Amino acid sequence: MLVPVILAGGSGTRLWPLSREAYPKQFITLLQNQSLFQLTLERLSILNDCAKPIVLGNEQHRFLIAEQIRQSAQPDCTIIVEPCFKGTAPAVALAAVHALSQYNQDVILLVLPSDHMIKDVQGFANSVNEGIFAAIEGKLVAFGVRPNHAETGYGYIQQGELLPSCNGFSIKRFVEKPDIKTAKQFVENEEYWWNSGMFLFSASSFLQELLLHDPAMFHSVKGAMSDAQHDIDFIRPCAKQFEQSNTDSIDYAVMEKTINGALVRLQSQWNDVGAWDALAQLLPKDESNNACHGDVLVKQSQHCLIHADHRLVVALGVKDLVIVETQDAVLVLNKTHAQDIKPIVMALKENKRKEVVFHQRVSRPWGYFESIDSGDRFQVKRIMVAVGQKLSLQRHHHRCEHWVVVKGTARVTRGDEVFLLSENQSTYIPIGVNHRLENVGKIPLEMIEVQSGAYLGEDDILRLEDQYGRLDQTPSHFETMTSELSKTA
Image 1: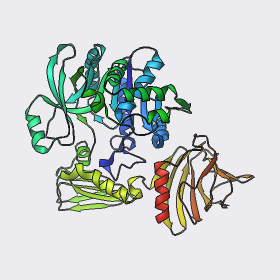
Image 2 (image 1 turned 90 degrees about the vertical axis):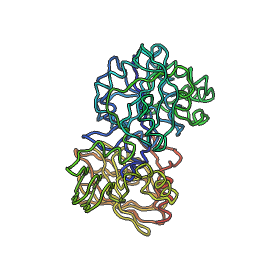
Image 3 (image 1 turned 180 degrees about the vertical axis):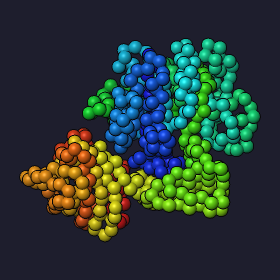
C-alpha cells in the first residue's frame, strides 16, 4: 500500500511579497487554476494502490489546508498539525508512526513537498513505481533530477553503483547548494543530480533508520503520537513530547547517514518554484522572453518577469528584472539575485513589518478580513463571512466596533440581544460586550467594520465559544506580531 505524505508547512520566503507567512506560496494560485498544494494532491490520482494522503501542516495554516483539500481532487485526507517547527524529519516521522498504527501493517510512504511543479504526471508515476521496487527491498529512495543548467539554489546527489532492481543507483553523497563554479562542474559530470526533496521508503525502514541515527527524535515523535488528540478534522500530537525533538531535515537526519539509500531518476520536468527566476521558467513568454501577469505594459525590455496584482505596471528599457506588485509592497530585483530574497525578508521581520506575515487580506476559518485603513486609535476592515459560518462569541477589553452590512444577511449577538441585519443596516458593539457575527443568508456576507479604541491588536480577543477549537489558546506568532504592529501604529 502506498501512502502519500504531503509536507505543507513551508513559508516560501523567496517568493515574497506574493508569498507571506500567513499565506505562503503552496496555497497561492500561481499556475493554472489551482494552488501548488492542490496540484500536488491532484497528481496522486494517477498512482496505483494509493491510500488516503497524510498532510502535515502548522497551526496557523490548518483551516487553509482543510479548505483547499475540500476543494481539491483528494477531498479525503488526514491532517496532522505539527505543534511547532522541527523540520521535515520529525514531520515525516509523525506520518510514519500514524500510518503504521492506522493500517496495522507496514506501508510505503511517498514524501512530497506541497510546492513543486511536475509537468509529466505519467513520468512522475513511472518514477514512483520504479522506487517502490527499491523500497520493498528496504531501500530509502531519493528522487533525482538530471540537471540542465548550473543551479546554485538546489542541493545535489552524487550517484554510486547501479541498482538493477529499480533502474537506479546507490547514493555516494549529498552535496549542499554549491557556488556557481561547482554547479557548472556538477552539470558536466553525469554522476550528479539535483535533489528534488521527494522521497520513498517503507514506514518501518524510515523509523528504524531514525532510531539508529537520532533515537531522541524517534522517541519524542513516538511519544507525541501516542498522546495525540483529535480536534475537529485534525490530529494534534502532544506538544510537550514533540518539542523535545531535535530540529532536522530528512536529508541530514537519515538520508545522508543511511547505507541503504537509493537514487531513482524522476522521469519528468521538475521545478521547485523556489524563487522568482524559477517561477519565470514556468510562465508563457512574449517575443522578448518577458513573462507577464496582470495589468502590464512592456516596451523595449527583455527577459523580465512582471507580476501585477492591483494596478498598472509599466516597464520600459529594462532587462533581466523581476518586478512584483502587490497591494502593499513592490519588489524589484535583478534575476541574478533571486536567491537573495531571504535576508531581505529577515531584515523586514526584524523591523516588525506586517508585510512579512500578512497580505492585506487575511484568511480565517469562517472567511477573511481585509485591512482598508488604519491610524491613531482607529482601524477599518472589510469582512467576508462564508455561507453558514460564524465568528467566535467574543469580547474586547480595549476597543469598540461599528458594523455595516454591505451585502447579505447577518445574525448579530450583542450581549443578551440577538437580531438580524440586512444590506445598508448597521450596529454598534461597545467595549466589553459579548458579541458574535453569523452568516444566515444564502450568499457570502460582506461587512465594513470600524474599530476604535486605545489598543487594536488581534490579541484583544477573549473567545468564549468557538466552533473552530480556538478557545484558551496562547496568542500565536501571527497574533503577537499583529499586536506589536498595533502598538507602533
